[in-house]
Length: 221
Image (cartoon, rainbow, N blue to C red; front, side, top):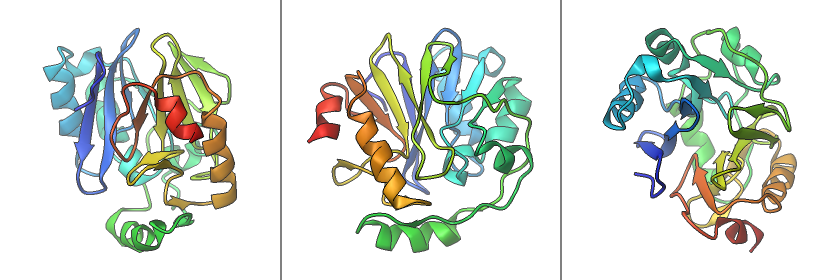
């Protein structure tokens, strides 16, 4: 459970991954969890006082199945629009088969073989807005292009709250650092370093525990 008011962290143990219900200008989902897990997010939204049809948008940090698998089901249930980056959009809208990631850190040597067989590499096709480009704003969220983990990976900065949603541009597993797997590990390192220069106090990770205060310093250390 997130330590931050207005943000409910929903944990999916299959991939040790988080998705979030965010009480922004409209109830917003950031990522959607692992296959078959739509009900977890909907239950979390209800517990926060939001019926499915009140969810106004779904923001996807990237195309991987542990973050985007439930998108089609959630659109059907909520009527919300999905937003994704242009580079990752075809994998969502067309269900194109995805490339598997490469090892990016020592931890990735164990992780990559597991996720390569544990997760599907195609998504159920669903219409989406491909408008998550660097500097764009969707509601109160500013889009930060953080490619490397995937070509179209983005992070999301809720500036008025000082909260960064990293997706897989960063992870907080054994420590704060780049995600252990990436399509382009060198570019992923550059994207991780970019985040350290952004103005945020708290960080919500796709993988790992939320940091409620002093988060930016953890990226710079």
